[in-house]
Length: 257
Image (cartoon, rainbow, N blue to C red; front, top):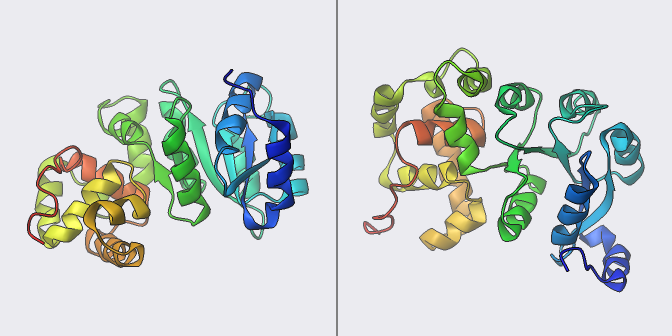
């Protein structure tokens, strides 16, 4: 059964809660809350401390002090953007990843502007969900590759406006596809590879494993990429990678050594 989580395992995880990444799930649908809780509690280093509807979110976050909040972007009583806006007023807010579907494009840019650490589709594969939560907990952020594509392939529609909201009014991230390719000429081959993997939604650890590098080395390369491309965060870099055609074009990665 999909929700057959052994009760004793949840109790055992609670005992080790101080060593776990504490996760709080906010969604108006009980089925989604239960499913995400089941998946995340299978990971030895993750512990879902609460799963609540939107109206109970701020109280639950105050009580449980999670490291990561998975927050539904649209809910009937208190929407995710309102909760996110309130959280950014806190002195030390938790890391937040928005739970989204393809009918919420118009909200993506605003959520990023409010400090969301990334976006996950509600049908994200379980192993990717777990890896993404780990990435969000480190501050690295996460972004489903399909969300990146959605931001760029709806000219004049809400997704395109969201992309503009993400990038503000300056920097390489505003460039059109042809100019984006030219900007990428400032990157080394290794940096281009890493940027392409970021655009595909991979975490630093996944990139490190793919390229046989230390995670710290990947982080250093990524910092250099941000500086060269004049982008502020991983999400902007991912959109630029998709715009320049790097995503899905990684077959020769690593051949140069």
